[in-house]
Image (cartoon, rainbow, N blue to C red; front, side, top):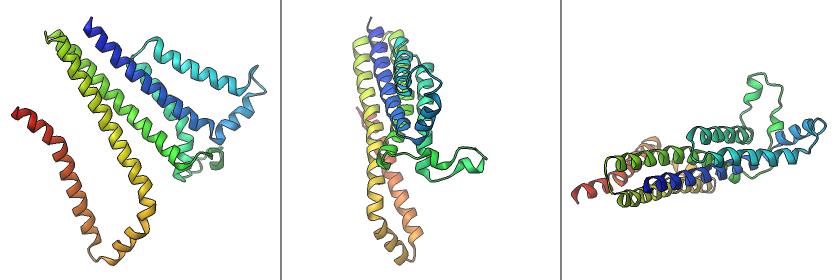
Length: 232
């Protein structure tokens, strides 16, 4: 019974997060010029408006996720569709006209988005976090079932899994927040950094030293909790 509860809780968390990520990616698509062009083509052909079709797409995604809750293949399929909805805005945000290089009839201007860059970055970050969470929570759920099958106390397993899930979610969310903060701060401090780089003779050496220090601190941050747990 407890094993089933663990599976249900993990599946519910994963499915809800994937659905929210799908909504965010679909939101970026609705604010993309490409969705307007598609609506112009579909409206004369469909007995319903394009907005009704978009609502049906959301309902369909919800049904796929929650009718067979927690099934990894279906969740991954929804994430793939989320990436597809997000891709036009991501291409436009990158300012790289890949369509012209492959001879596509679609103009780069057709991918224009009226959303601010912050929203597009947030959506991309959410998609990457969704991929990581899907992998992490799936592994945690499988580990919990294996422990119970080997005779571990279900109550203790549930407590450990809750802590692991909270740790995974907080780690991924914290990493995303750090990246978002850096992305927002860099444009403000870019002139100052460029001035320092140009005025310093060994600028590249300084960058390497800073990168090594950050790498060592990151390794220590991950290794320190495991060392403390081994001592206990």
